[in-house]
Length: 128
Image (tube, rainbow, N blue to C red):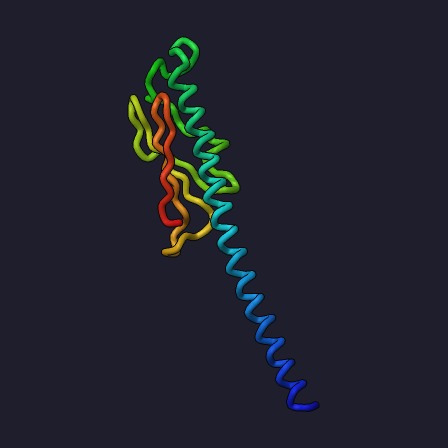
């Protein structure tokens, strides 16, 4: 083989190697963002359930304008996206936390917290 052919083969291997590394990085970032979105969606669903409990009268097994007594349903405390717990229970608000299945920048699982009030649900992402 000539020197020009060997140079082209080496150059081709380098280009393919760079493309593989870029592809792996894009896939990892995409998986992380998909997990953040899934955990956030699950927390919004749980927050809506807590708000429904808050608005339901005591006579109908609701909270009667309080979040006291609401728990994360056993069937929804762990999903394919992560695990969910109540961090700060309160009568007029509660904080739900979701720990994702993907690891964040510091090597710990992705964490999303949702603060639920009677009329609002806000989320904050930790360790993206």
